Length: 339
Image (cartoon, rainbow, N blue to C red; front, side, top):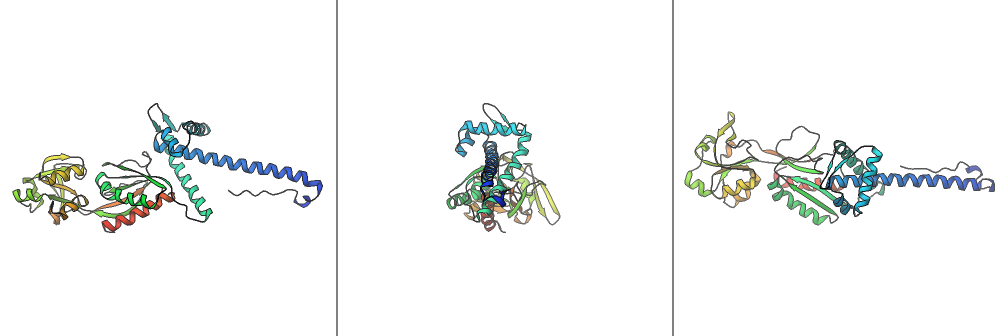
């Protein structure tokens, strides 16, 4: 906002007759201007504090992050709720959680703060050094193998940025969990999330060479009915039904799981131990296939590759640091996964 202070008595301001009146009016206008500035800054501070409490789910953690006293953080949120006449946070002695109104307000709050940051950067006419927290989620094994390494190099290049990396084999709400972005494997459901396509992964069936030496190689998907298999519910949600693609389209095959696990790391370990064939993602198997510890089968029956996306909830209203990280991650993931 630009405030122009005009003198209503400019014509006669040099004369003694108007000098005192002119000075008084200028003083009043200056006081009003600085009062408006302070009020706007207080409101921005309140939004920043509320967003930090919501993301950390703790007044104490937010205070540490912002380097403020817990009492000042508590007062700022209470004043914000009082001004809005709406409860934004439910508080107990052990936890802090957003109300429905708080969830909606947080999304708008983030957009406003991101826009304000961008406006400041434009007005300064320079690229602001990125700083602050970036909150990221990714599937457990993919995150450990491919997201964590690029996070480490990113942190090495941008010393003022910190990253919270949440590795989970389930899809979480970015808004509810206070996350800036997520890495997702597979087709995306319709949602308000914005997506950046960064690659694709295959689904492969493989086993340890010692298992294949004892039991042979299946020539068609139906041959798996006579083999032991390891099912991972993160890849094959129905453990005893695996799908394949052939000349006639999709084929569902009944298999006999000796072991059912909910993590891909468990399926890989079991396959390496010779327990049977595992159906896993290509990025999970490729290091072991390259070393000769796993052998792929039924390659010609693989389904189409699954896409990899980076998703975020804020559309074009991204902070500079989050946009920077998305560009950084997208470039490196595309090098690895084929785009």
